[in-house]
Amino acid sequence: GQQVMQIPQYQHVQEGEDFTTYCNSSTTLSNIQWYKQRPGGHPVFLIQLVKSGEVKKQKRLTFQFGEAKKNSSLHITATQTTDVGTYFCAGRGSGGSNYKLTFGKGTLLTVNP
Amino acid sequence: DAGITQSPRHKVTETGTPVTLRCHQTENHRYMYWYRQDPGHGLRLIHYSYGVKDTDKGEVSDGYSVSRSKTEDFLLTLESATSSQTSVYFCAISQRVLGETQYFGPGTRLLVL
Image 1 (tube, rainbow over the protein chains, first blue to last red):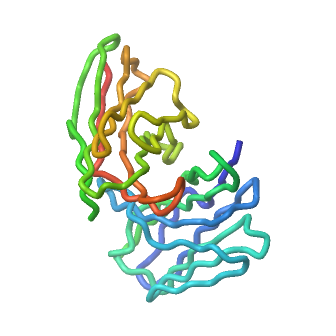
Image 2: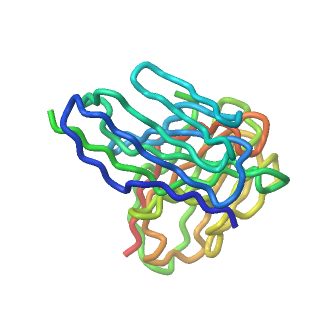
């Protein structure tokens, strides 16, 4: 079945430093989605990337989708304490039931003020 | 936040007892999903539904059953709870197609003793 690997598992940064998490799929994806989960909360949708090579920005967050549609990254510039949480990528497969989302294991970001 | 509620929010039960978790939505979305979240495993799909009485298995469906008799309600049943089913369970919904943007409920923390 489809597998989505996400690294690193944990990342601790000083406030103001940058942060990047990477996502790799074993198969080509129809799209990739990113979610954020605050401690004790539920996952919240951030963004969806569909096109090969797509880059999207949300303020200090930059999302990229690889040319082969098998990998993606989330980069946060100048982290703030409000960025604390677990960031998940979720790959949507292609074809029938493969359209289900497969989540990566997430990257837990902690920020030291 | 999307109109999704889960009940109960917390439950402690004993091994071998049946447990039913409820997910209720007010969005009239077609798709509903049950995930479990465990440390080191991220979010794993248990079952999903694509309409009333229409359900399918996810990647970790053993020991779980589901039912959807109304658009707004999706029930997850552990027929005979085991300690390995101790987890946080999230319900999610998506509007039109399988695997599109998902909106998560607040979660249910289940402890099986």
